[in-house]
Image (cartoon, rainbow, N blue to C red; front, side, top):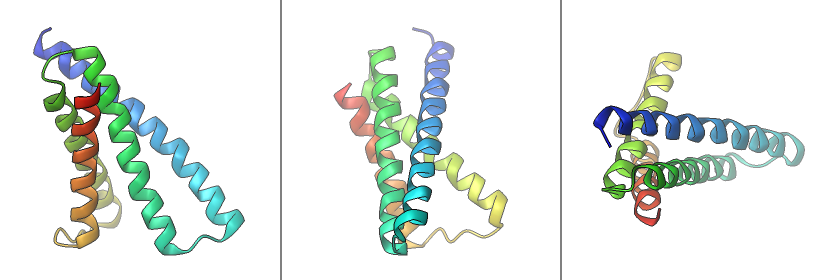
Length: 120
């Protein structure tokens, strides 16, 4: 499989990941509204959603590419968090790279992608 074809599969995996993210975040927003979830519970749920969707996207990518699955899962997880970080920067114009929550989220997204690729 050519590199261009692999990148096409990565983009499709990212699209699936972001679509599922949107759906799960909508469900979370409803749960926050309906049940009055605390901020700490909401933050943990957001990170869990990030990990689940990077795992799912990388799993799909690994099934399609079939070689060096862990590497392509790692790339998907890295691109996923990089795009979310870029969007956060564009919206808020502030970002604290050294913030523990940001570092933890980034590591978990990359790890979710890596694991999804390996298990595919």
